Length: 130
Image (cartoon, rainbow, N blue to C red):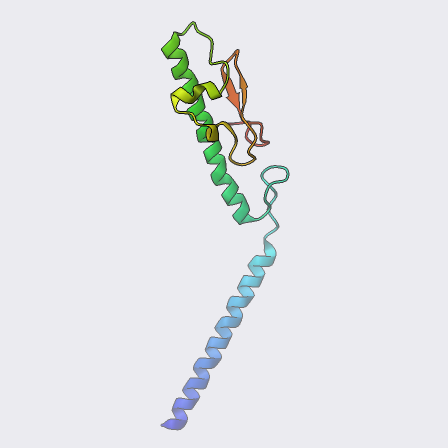
């Protein structure tokens, strides 16, 4: 009985080694098959993790711009539709727009603002669609 238990243990150990080798083979195969990702923007991260984190901060940028646009609309509504948009973005502080919301969270560049039209946009490459 003892001899048989030893043989069974050797068989299990062999199966374990084969399973580990197969797992390592799959890992190497899939790791070597994936090309390096292209950066989202020039000078941006090139790893999948870095790109995922940047996409998360892009959502913050889009939300900031949407909140600024709503604040501009509210400021125009409170002063009357015939009034021009606010002269500067910092003047939207009374609408709840803080200084940290006036720049892109990805590149820390301040948002661009046209006071004549009331349009605001992000100067970061790739954020033109926001």
